[in-house]
Length: 260
Image (cartoon, rainbow, N blue to C red; front, top):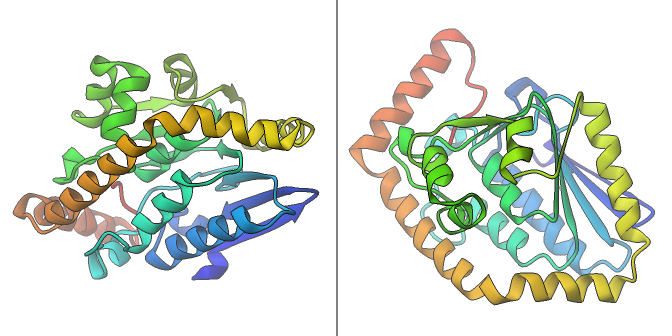
């Protein structure tokens, strides 16, 4: 399934596109590994100066592929999804997210680590971890309260409430909202060009100064979240909720993705 992640390097801008539209860009273990490999390689490649991550003009990602997720759940801290998280949090180059349509679970928590987040107005951001018997991931339990305040963060992480693109901008989860996916992608490319024109060492050192003070705490939070996430997957609550979701998806259509 590695061909489900498209890469295009054009004049210093690496665009990574999740390309599985028939499953609403649901992510498998193989796709996480591919994304992680590409990000680690990009950091070592002098030709790459800015990275855009997107799911194309219609959908960002519906989260984990539920069938794959239940068949091969994460069992250790170097599991594919956690390796992807490590690649993102240690990335030394600017990361732009172009979010069109659904951004569920990790599709939302990934945005907390991006330098610029552009969304469509119809984007749907949601973190329904507790609803599925799970816990937050990707540092969301630390970063969302800091970004949004406790009241708003608890609406997202505990109640599983969602946001559209306009509200994501209003709350500070995104920088700008656009009417459609093509506008969103074009704006991401335009920002990438602006970043390319910046003095590169100054840009990277400035990113480092902004990220470094909280890095140790973030990595500790990731380890705690991921350890607990593995434990939660083995709980009766999670098994019941995830299997119920899988059965509902199977009754209607072949499973398209999760919501963790």
